[in-house]
Image (cartoon, rainbow, N blue to C red; front, side, top):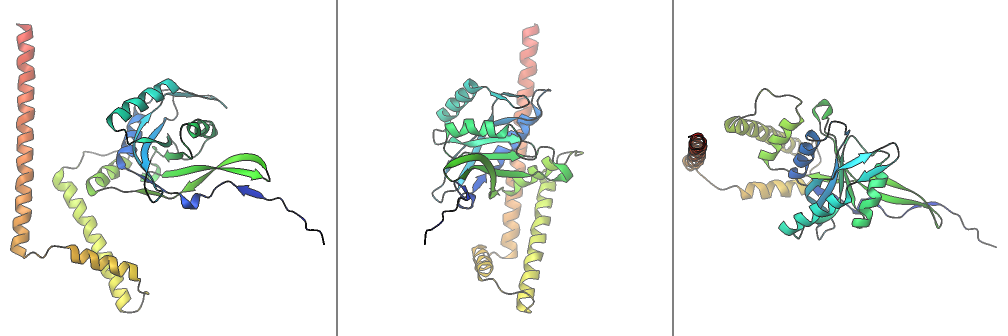
Length: 285
């Protein structure tokens, strides 16, 4: 009996094997570039710099904006500016290479395919990062995509953007800044004590969640997860064994060190201001 061959749609690669990790500095740079954009520009785009980790994760550590103009179905990039900025960055950190590009907005647009095609010539399989700088409903949507080719048999039909897992890791100070950035308007920036208070409140909320989970496991309401149990055991084991008096002394020493830094910085600002005024007076005389 003769066998029949069927032709099916195929993707050239799968996005399940690729993930990305972005540092907070990249998000802050993108938001700053968006605020400084020209009045007629609807969005900003730029180059992502970083490296590929041994496990295959794309580590995005830096970025810079690239001037561009968009029309109905055309995109013009300042390629010379892009290459000059890349050369300048690599003089400072030669380990950072192009890993993709970014754009502001809620998702992929019509001109994204043209820009992605340009970066595909700069690096193999570039990452496309989108940042919603509108922070609708107090949330900043950040997504990462790669382009996969859709083919029918031996014929390539089109390219499609597929979302990949994205990890946004922040220390507590960076998370406080990001939370403020997501707020459309604030009365004032929190001081150090207010930031510490917010961090402690978040820590207490997390501890309460852990207590509830452990109680539910002990009472049999939730099935135990060995991975979570080992993680909690390692966390408890890593805590230093301090008496209440030693802990109070440690906290007081840290507060005093912090106050000393604030005092020294205040003196430095005063001296700089005085020197500037003396220099201005000398020039007038």
